[in-house]
Length: 380
Image (cartoon, rainbow, N blue to C red; front, side, top):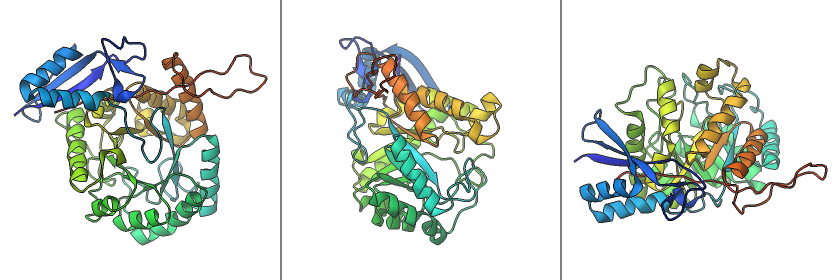
């Protein structure tokens, strides 16, 4: 039986409600969709159709109930993730407590510096702090879990004690368990809970959020000629399978965010295809997280080799992601991203009724209203 996928097209905050659906219950709406079908891994056929016609095709192939379920997954509002309402873009600040991360290795290897920088990120507008003790850059070797815990636990404990929402970036079950006990409320696993056979059970038994990311291979080898039959649909199928494994283990969809894993076992063309098609992943009905900050695909496009010199490209990719349905952005440069997102939201949703952006008394213009977007798309 052929697999069927729907990707929302023409996302727009001003589309007429009578003719369109909201993407994940947010401000962005769509009235057309790309219908993709494939009966063999390499044989995908795509066609752009009015939304009603696309859903009618799904109903003909799978039945009315399947079409209605897909429609609901595309349009229903997402539940709060890690206690954070997704009525606006959320910012996850990166805190690498490592000596060798690709963009900031060594900057926060000292726990005190890591905690201080986390506090600064919170003040700048970060909603979640993502603490990691193992570099997962291309070519990186694994870190012993005991060493990983030595690096991250003091930082997790100190930031959580201040009331911060803390995420633990790890693929080791023992580290996940210890970090959750120390106050972390989110697990961010680049292996989508496949890297350690105990990880799924740890998350299932905890009251925490979890980010399931796609990665082809392992960090040490993932960039050695990655190949896909169809990168967008292959990543979709992987995330769907991991979502089903989590549901079977008792992890509710509201606890799950999905991440297509930009830069993790992908070429430049793979990354660009995924970024352009982000809305398709809303067909799985979960929150959508995007990590593009300082990644090497920006250098391949722009020529900027130094990771810390890729801020403009990082912001461009992040805003493009928001326009296609991303709801959580994982970033290194929190203050700059918060400013860019607030301006983008004010322009993209000009009639929104969100919280006002604070301005100084000397400002020449009145406070701009800020309302965030949302997005999504399906497969049955």
